[in-house]
Length: 325
Image (cartoon, rainbow, N blue to C red; front, side, top):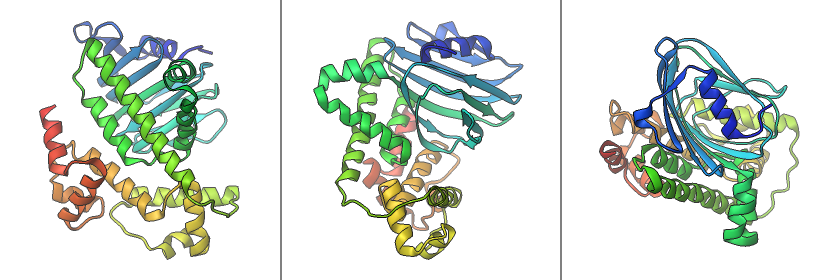
């Protein structure tokens, strides 16, 4: 068993096929290349006084491989995955596929298994925040109000589909800051992540309590609906279709969905679409018109309007920003 997340990543880069590239590395910011016989790509580890870490990965292994960890330190991991080629298992639970978009995990000291498939790209950006950051650093800065950020993270782990967070992760990944400016920039982005999560949590709890009891079977049925929407972003299913899929009446389904995910079905679907659009816009091979259709909008102008309302810039402007970076 490993005590800290920093120790885990130190061991990872020693035991797995990654070699540090010293000309691209500096104190607290280590850049690694995957060894050619094992695959292609890179891994970047940025640490800040043992308070938080940022991991940026973009690699394609030539062989299947498995990572196993058991870490005692309490920490929160908020990630943006751009690929869905890997899978994971916590303790004795079933193996689950990693989905594109935001994922939030609160460490509970159980053994974690991560599986990567050969010849399948793995791209993600992770922010790892230690318990010490919450209980010491944040409390000193913000007093008792820091508790709201802790509650927000628990909420985020259950309902991670928040498109604004994807935008912040893209900014973290694209940043070219170095040295002290990098530390200031990344901490600012981490605080922004926590602020957004806290805002969304506060908005969710403001709504009138929803009086519907859910069984484990109900929760599993709702997850099937989410899975279907994830795989069929270009479709616009009716409430009747989705409620039938969940084996519920339309009224109960909508109440159950909002109680579980803190928003309506179609708002959730819109967020899924915008999350995917953000990722597709980084690929210059896709036209904006094609991206709009890919995520369910036949009218590119309508798509651009929704995108701007959520992210504050048009799809073209966002793509131009990525090209400059």
